[in-house]
Length: 151
Length: 232
Image 1 (cartoon, each protein chain N blue to C red):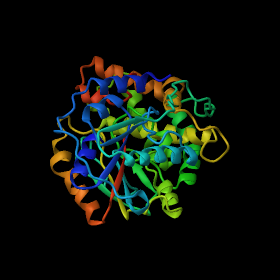
Image 2 (image 1 turned 135 degrees about the vertical axis):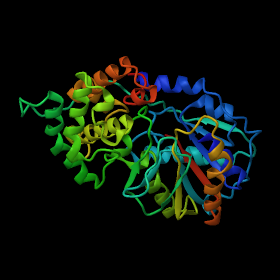
Image 3 (image 1 turned 135 degrees about the horizontal axis):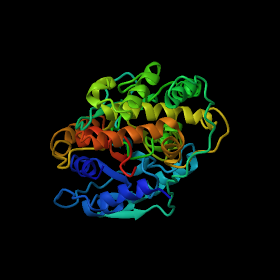
Image 4 (image 1 turned 180 degrees about the vertical axis):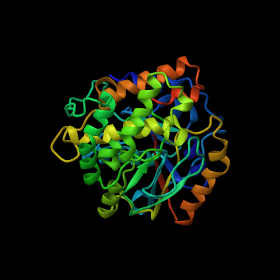
């Protein structure tokens, strides 16, 4: 049992969420033709690169070849050892490469996106500014599909 | 994550969220969500288990068959974190003159270095480098003993960063002490190493003690609260 995870999920249950005004919908391309990117809130950044500040609303683009990624998240409230053992448990980049190799997905995007999960409560910056800019960066790479992984 | 799903979908990119808190994904009405009741910090569930990670991704990609949303499906397996302390040996006392926590921090350096060599990188270094770890622990010894926190010389001036680095130094060392990273040890459950650090090590207990002293001295909430997980 984990009191920590139970408590964090209870916090989430009681956390107010923004009104997003419905559910946007894109009719997806066939998976075998889709270019797939990862968007994570683990605050990953390349070792030696620009770290995340506490409350950081910005994002980092991560080259698809990068594996030495630092977990820059500021919350002490989750397990960090899983990702130290295997990056893929947060950022399944090797799994995507395997799925591209066997033709399940069309291709792996050339770059991926990392935000920090602990955002200011109103999430206005990622909603109105940094989020759309990150999406535009992936659109410029002709990304069709993103898989979002939380931390 | 859910906010970003809306943003990316609105930008014309199809999205699938692997959610960690079901009620948030539900209330946010994301286009496509696979809820994964896995340990927080492990959204793909199991480290070093490619087959399981592929299963998660396959179930996520299956949501693309839906013709309208929101669609929210649960991964059938629940994996709980386990706050039973990892069983691993801490090196014996070496320097009887040092505080037990400082001595311990020096004692696990070789284990930390083995993990560093195996991984080729570290998450330590937000405000303290490994060479400064014993001095950083000594700062907490001083705070716990009554030195006002503002006068204790907190490296970088940020207790959250300081405690992150010390904890991460220990957690990365534990991966070698338990033969996880460079041996055939079992993969520890989520939070098992966290529990080892706070329940079993001198330094983990010291952090809790120093935090209580700072709280009692009415240090600002963000200065003491984020030194350890909230439930501790």
